[in-house]
Amino acid sequence: MPVHTFSTPAPAAVLCGVAGWVPPRVVTNDELAERLDTDDTWIRTRTGIRRRHVAEPGQATSDLAVEAGRLALRNAGFDPAGTDSVGTDPVDAVIVTTTTPDRPCPATAPAVAARLGLGRAAAFDVGAVCTGFVYGLATAAGLIASRVATRVLLIGADTYSTIVDPLDRANAIIFGDGAGAVVLRAGHADEPGAVGHFDLGSDGTHEDLIMIAAGGSRRRSAAGEPTRAERHFAMRGNEVYRHAVTRMAESARATLAGAGWKADDVDHFVPHQANLRILHSVADDLGLPRERCVANVDAVGNTGAASIPLALADTAARSAIRPGDRLLLTAFGGGLTWGSCLLTWPELPPPAAPHDPLVPHDTREDTPS
Ligand code: UT7
Image (cartoon, rainbow, N blue to C red):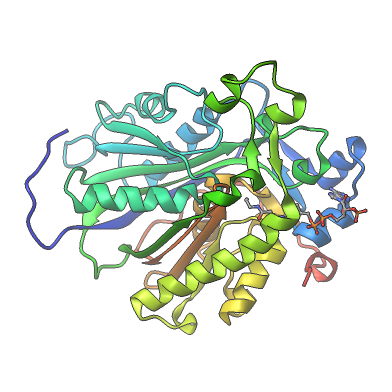
């Protein structure tokens, strides 16, 4: 990849493609209730989730990432199997953000790039749990601003079904599998699609709130085999909930202040789809009408690093975002980590819908306060 010399002004990262993909298999709340001590009403009223998509045995994160990446490249007008209309490689960097890489080593992104036919593109993973997509956007924007890359494919993909204990009712009900992707190109800070005004943060003193204890060097360097609990994803949901509401609202506010926007300037608030109650609390805290809060958690659950791009793709597929609309993206996840950024929606062809729409229903009992 060529390294260029610097000059001003630095190019901005501009969104030019979006897509989402979920594995076809749907797991409803009722299906979970057949094997867990839970029920549809509890899940809907506590989380807003009605169903989630789950990978088949043998299906890995890269399989989902490749599907979303291919669709996003197509949405951007590139042919992932060959070259684009200007005769160059479609992208010169691929970033996969995930908590569930195919393997601890190597990173998942190089294999995804190879399967998409992206030649010698730089490829690496970013890990920030459910904040991964916003961290990935900042990383991609940095590559573009420094002229290391002119076009970047950023994919958020997770298969939580491979790390959540299926017998852990608190977590098994929340998570779903999926992937979402965006293509970013070098452009101008004032054009539609420009990504900017980031706020990123972390607080590692609370690393124990969301964790897989085994699998890494910490547990491997200790004596004895890991227990079942240590091998699976663990989350202290109630404490995480409180942090999520506070940190997301703070981050969103800091980002708006940095850009000189008021909450009322936001047409679509696109939060990490953690739990509908969390999304609504943050929107309320910011003084944003709940109708401006993009939510697809009912149909896909919490899909980790995939959740924001999947929500974007879902909304774009329904043509619910118009060119020129102003978006605030805010995420929160393990680490703890959090982050926000702003973007103005560009002119894009609507991507394919990532999943079938939910059957219309009476939402009164689904809408927890
Ligand atoms: O993506 C990263 C960020 N993640 C999040 O932001 C997730 C944040 N946390 C949450 O979304 C919620 O805390 C949960 C959905 C995980 C749990 O909801 P909650 O309202 O905080 O429930 P809780 O943990 O306070 O538990 C309340 C009760 C407990 O029973 P007791 O002790 O009151 O008798 C739990 O054992 O609900 C019980 N419970 C369940 N009951 C039925 C926990 N899970 C279930 C379940 N079905 N699936």
